[in-house]
Image (cartoon, rainbow, N blue to C red; front, side, top):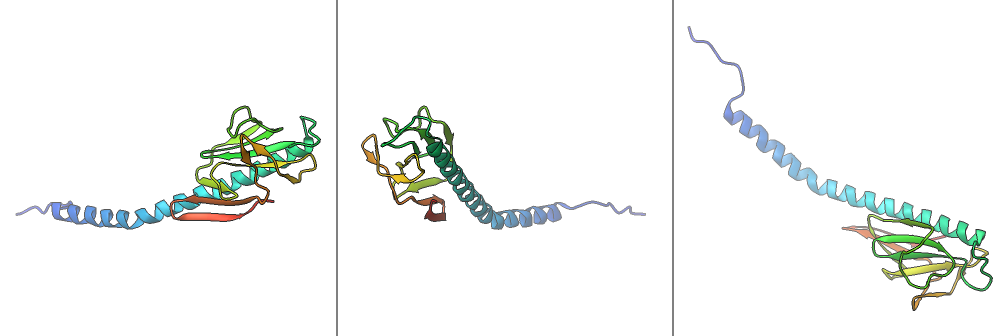
Length: 153
């Protein structure tokens, strides 16, 4: 009498592993695209938060600015910052609010840019560290093949 053995043969195991690897390779590009889409959406959300903080700070006008910028939003590669008053340099030192966006941002077509608001919350032509702050408030966010653009309000 011969006893039959139950179990999986080595061939069956190798075929199953090969199929799983093919499925994983097929899904990988989609997961990268999903991650890039999420990064662009999160960066756009951070940019909207920055604009809200900028407007609130400008209207609050803690530096009592009358003819200069009441608040400035600075975008440098890898960082977004909001500051009361006009900073001396286009960097993110001593700011009231800051965030690290997961995707690259261009404000008004530049990687390093600022937006200045007066005490009424209106866009103002100002210069920070020799860089003229933009007044159009257009943005472009990109990561990998995903991107988003529009105008801040």
